[in-house]
Length: 154
Image 1 (cartoon, rainbow, N blue to C red):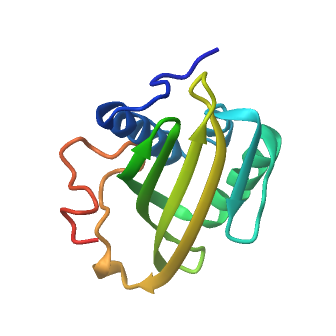
Image 2: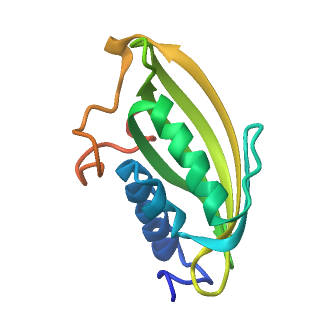
C-alpha cells in the first residue's frame, strides 16, 4: 500500500501532504488517522512517546475525548527529500467549556511508500476566551476558502 504523495517532496507535494494530514486530523477519527503512519511509526508528543499504529490510535482516542470541538490548521515550514516540517495551531474546548489554542511545530520523516515513519511534535497551549477563537468552520475538513495560519496572523 502506498500513500501519495511520495517522497522526495516538492513544494507542491509537501503542501498536498500537509493538507491531507490536516484533513485527517480534523476528522477526529483515530483509526483513519493511524493508517497514515507506518506499523512501527515513532512519535514524540509532549510527554508521550507512542510507537506503532495501535499506540497512536489509543493516543488519539484519549486526545479527542478531552479536546472537544477540535479544529486544526497546518502550514508548511520546510521540506527536503523525505522530510517535512510544519507549524500548526488548533483550537478546542475542554468539558468545562474553557477554550484553548495550541501552537506547535512538527518534524515528519516518511518511508518510501508515503507513510509517516517519525513524528516529533513540540506544542504550547494557552487558554483563550470564546470570542478570541479564529477557527469557526463546522467540525470536519477546513473549507478551502478559510484563511491559513499566516493570513490569520498566527
